[in-house]
Length: 368
Image (cartoon, rainbow, N blue to C red):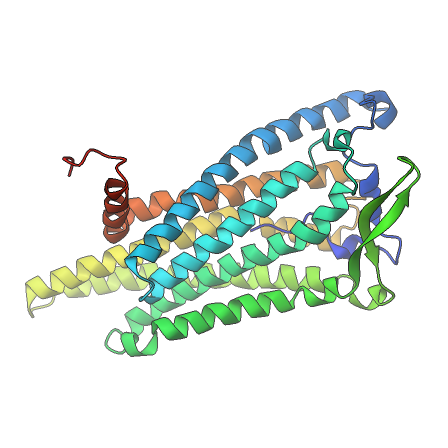
């Protein structure tokens, strides 16, 4: 699943950042008068509203809800399988982080609905999402990415050290590695959250006090650090997954050919090769799905770094938001599609899922 926070601190200048332009951007005013909001480009604004409603309210939210259901099912199945193997623990944690990612995207769909300001809530939706969903979404996606790195690295080690892999990669060590991944990614948020907080502010437009984002005096020292770390980690993670997946494919083909030509116990070798191929194929497909769905993230993040106008308050703000809406959909597709991959390629997952369904009476007891 990779999501960049919609609003980068790179785009925030001094202590009066572009972030506060969210108070008046991308939402209709109380009278929903389009001409008042964008007097010179009514058609452009109307097109943006239609795109936002279709992409966010309909497509993205629907995929997100399906993804929530599918990942809850994934977690239930993995839990009943027993969290006693490295791959099961990793996939369980990946399903958990995908759930958080989906929740953050659904929260974004609410906050940036074109008509959300008509709700008259006591806070700025955009600024609240920046604080509670923007950066956390980037965190959860990076965790998913680096769990994928760990899974592919583990499979590579299985090929390189087949006899000692069970002692090298243990369930306990996997839990420690996943914990380290979570902590290290969480630490990248410290610079941002050390200089931003939620505060009640008076809104002249609404003549009332609303909850919004505010900045501390150390903003100049911390601004942009978290976003740069985010971009760096995303690029490194994607490169690692691509390289490790390529290594898996090459070595798997070579080892499969070698085993099939072996003059030893052919039945044992063939059986082992089949199990190995299935396990490796599952990891390859999962990793490929992550890479493909995260591909748009890297160039867009780099554009945001080197092109300040490509931001929420910049010249290309509408293109910026629409671009991230599309990236959100790709991320949701990745998160929601994993259950199909597991069901198709993992016989243990499929068997356990069917057993659970039978147990709860959703299928006829006489069916196989």
